[in-house]
Image 1 (cartoon, helix red, strand yellow):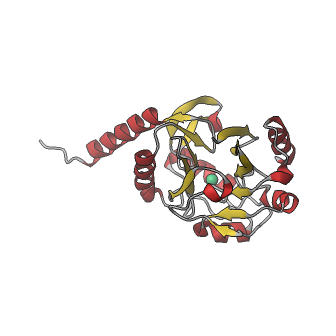
Image 2 (image 1 turned 60 degrees about the horizontal axis):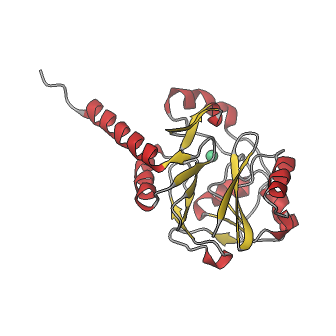
Length: 239
Ligand SMILES: [Zn+2]
């Protein structure tokens, strides 16, 4: 049985998956998080040299910031979805699109944030099983935040969902269990479908890139309330 260990880093969460298999790391934090990552691995009893796989929910500076260095040390395969290949190769976030007023105000400060570039050894694809790495889980393509954003859905019910959702305010420091949209989205219009797909195949906790974890029932309620609000806005006013 796989255990999810959250590694709470400076700006984001990475996750270690351990069990009766070699450890798998999901996301690697921001440049400069190397020592915190090493400490998190040690606390979970993991030697980074033993990693079987470094998998990415998506490629942004705060999720793939230490991949190049870790992969050199671990000599394990690196994986992300094809949709984020250009981000990994260019080694910076590119221009970010803000969601809502706060996102639009913040976008210029995080656009083009740099990280050491890297290339994937294995593509992560929709429906791909991770049993080959000892983890009973399926990759779900959940684009919107980036074109190559994925969620890792464990058979036991929990999922690691990256920046499809965010928990709380100030990067999760306040009310970390409160569901919300991330500040940035490459294509915000695709997020509702990704969220619907995710909620249909999960039932436990949703582990996010910032804050969290989120309870499935809270996210489902929040999604329905958002929908009702959007419907009200779209309804024509009848005199
Ligand atoms: Zn991101």
